[in-house]
Length: 183
Image 1: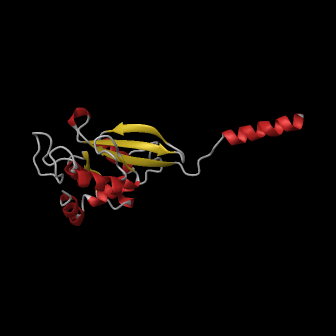
Image 2: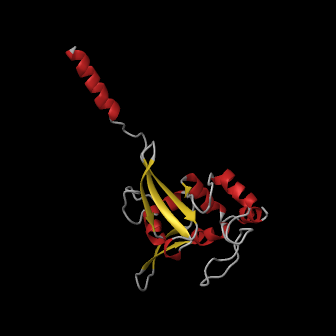
Image 3: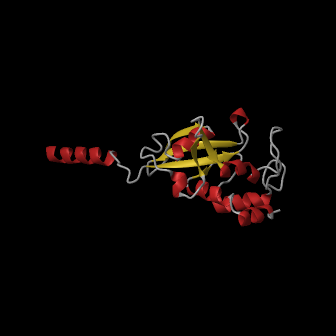
């Protein structure tokens, strides 16, 4: 009887401690007008192998510093330059004269175009790729769902592989022409 209790106790102890096989960061973006009149909302998660945890919403410069490995972070403790890994031209530049650091990411400047026909604020100008004024057309919505798994551009984030694919796509003239043609 005592031996059975010890075996059950050990089983419960080891069964309750699940060591994830792969703890990794997950990055993403939502393209919708959000806090502080920003069009893009950036998010970081930790994928523990079962669920996404430790959600953190960050501003664009902070996001770039975390994802590029410029800053140490729980989301990037090895300080890997994920932009470089995915061949995305983003990072941190230091002005040689003033030594002021600034972040850059050209694809981020185009993300608003998948959702809006015109830039949503008076401070900017430009024509977007959406076929409706404030949201993608039905065919564009379906395309976004089929390609990226995003049900609603207003509510959902482009996460993980969809995020990286989107950043590559918004730099591709053929992809842009195809997306614009979806009436």
